[in-house]
View 1 (cartoon, rainbow, N blue to C red):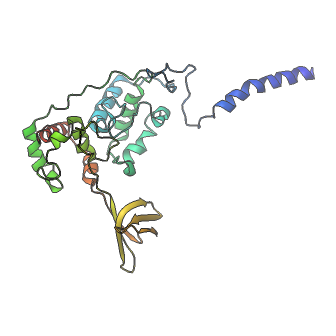
View 2 (spheres, rainbow, N blue to C red; view 1 turned 180 degrees about the horizontal axis):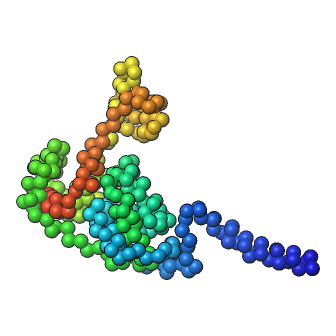
View 3 (tube, rainbow, N blue to C red; view 1 turned 30 degrees about the horizontal axis):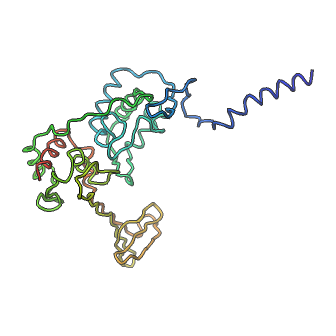
Length: 295
């Protein structure tokens, strides 16, 4: 009798051990995973399992798609499967683990400054709708490639925006840094440069002999209580330390205690980052159409 119970007990252990050893238990808040994995993607790799969740109301999904395309598509692609500056969100682990936008909300509302993602002033309901739309996208099929018609704007309106409401002339000149940009880059690349300022992962195809856009470095000035200052290219910054490299190559690091020392960071692309939540589709398309004419 004892040996039989022991045999059953060992049997349970033997059956349970592989599952425990092969796959760590998910966090308490992680959603349950389906019994069967999704089909492999077209590239032959096994697609991640998609969490089991009831379908969202169609009107919420439709609203999420609208909000996403108005605020996020220029970086993450119109289908959320990756753009020139933003990663694929459909297969992102954070999106897979999210249920109703609770994991996505902090990212959207706080941004990721170090990676060029601004904080967006979207409501919790809007972000939940975006999450619902992302969750509705199939994982097992990457879908047809996006075929966006980039040149749908009005070049004259783009020129007016460049010289007026867009305040682009504060930093750029069509006879200076933007001279011949229409001949140097494809329309899609130009549109990416408008949105990101050049802080993207790639710049698309360029004509032979053309160089990638030069992205000016972020600089920082540190002022000590004594009045002594140090200015250079920002190396890294946190709540506890700021480090920089001075023009002569000297590396300097300063401990931070609240507002001491005084730290002023200058990001030459800040205007582009601040504009992300304010862009209108018509402005971006018209500005792209105008810059393409600058041959």
